[in-house]
Length: 126
Image 1 (tube, rainbow, N blue to C red):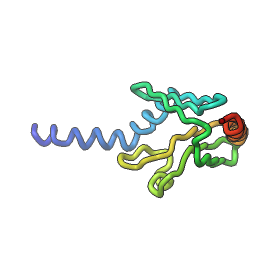
Image 2: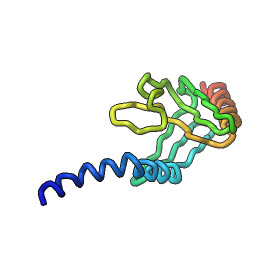
Image 3: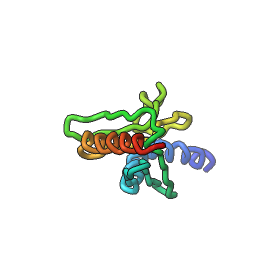
């Protein structure tokens, strides 16, 4: 009986690695919304508990577009470390990722909207 119970955590971790992480990622993406205002970039997300990330356009140092052949892509805000670029798209403990709009359709158009809003916010600043 002890050995059967001892194996359950390993089965649970194995199930999460092979199938569960895709379900968690799909749930997280389905519950994520992005927004751009005249002053801020907003990321509302949370697979299990809601969170809101707000970034001021005037203080964004790096805005990076990574585009796919189909036109979708990811727009990252701020510098990304080596580990973040290596494990992009995967939430590994200890790997700090820059906030981003992940897998948005027509990413170049969204990127241009963000850059235009950033330029307007910079011009309007005192």
